[in-house]
Length: 262
Image 1 (cartoon, helix red, strand yellow):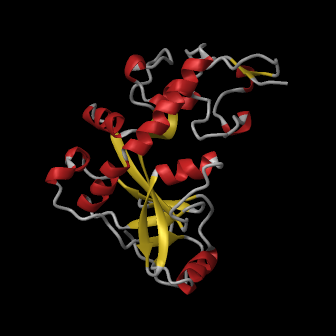
Image 2 (image 1 turned 180 degrees about the vertical axis):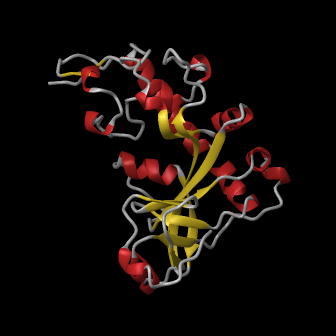
């Protein structure tokens, strides 16, 4: 059976989020006086992906090369709209105050943007009454045209690919040199709005910053830290906080070692 969806306009999906943005969306979000963060993760990957593996190609297209010690990496950099509590554009009637200018990810929620990813109701903020087990096409929030929603998801992926050179230069200009070990966490950067705009708007011809080649990998797991170090990576053991988001709890075994902040 298929999974049907009908938005209840509860507003739960508009709370406590980090919404992936394209460069243009990030500039617009920041210009509205809202917070934009940069999340960075890295993973040892080959320089070529299998053309038969959509997710591998996707990862290669949205990342760039770097090194950590003697290890080759792929660096994944994501601009996100950050808000704690309700989105600053969520109105009292639970409608979006910038509906026609909202980010692409908001337009397709709860659909997944990653190729081949299946929608899992258990991972969504929507209440149980929003879901049905009817074998019908998905009805997305404010978006009944499934084909159009798919086109928006494709447009978001294409923007993430096209934005890579901009993010490479932005990392250099903002002196972003650390990345979370992918699958375990993200390094978090939140530059002032003006600095972020300058970094994202700097053109290749006027750039005075060489791409960052050497990266430090961050983890809050001692076992991962030791494994990365033994493999030749430059690595640091850190705790969760404003500069690092871990997908797992801090390893209690690393409290005896001095940790560093970004």
